[in-house]
Image (cartoon, rainbow, N blue to C red; front, side, top):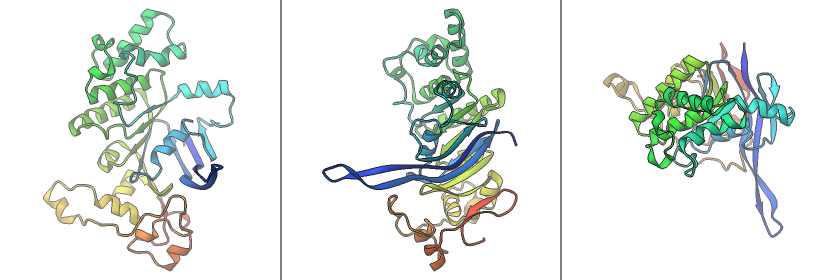
Length: 324
């Protein structure tokens, strides 16, 4: 397998400070032992409910938040072990599209300045004419009009702003892009346009995506493999066919039951699963399965013993004591 990104036992803990001295009294285990890999030109969908640590995974991979422990390999190189000069070179090949296009663009910069910033920082164009042609090409490729280059972000709609964010991410000729809820703030019709744009760019350039989302319909459309995350750890991992057709973890089953049904046949088959119980505290996690308090199938073993990460066949991994 030609892996572009490998994440091994990644951890990110945030300290909780208290008292007059401001000492650390607890830690929020936002990411707790996450491992996965993405092959060149593939898309991994990372799904789970809000607060499970999805966005933190993406930010730690790119170094926006430092890791607590674990390894991040990009094209075989450890991003946390290479020199600063080499890290800068590798970061040119890794970009991110953030969730909110309204706050991720500098209101004082024109679209031209926003897109060209990375190009100029890495010296990717030798002349002003070349730079202008490059920005014009990026805008056109992302569905923007080049004559809009000297407008400001507030003069664009939400969908157009996200296109600007995508053009900015493409400016440094990256191989890998983290898409953090990249369409969740947009109207449904605009979401479809942006998703189609991302698919077209992947097919034409050969991009690799980590697609972070809570929208399972979009994840099913764009992803090759899917990882289901719950309270800081991955509980199920497999191809999208395995996850959507034969989910093996009760949490995955509950998530999929919440996907809206549109046809009469789908509505007749679908059985909505309502999870009961409270979420455990992220800084006082249970010793056993973290989902045990909300799982309809849990027993004493689930509450006391942490389930192993096991291959259920054909690379379909699950963290659960039961076999469904």
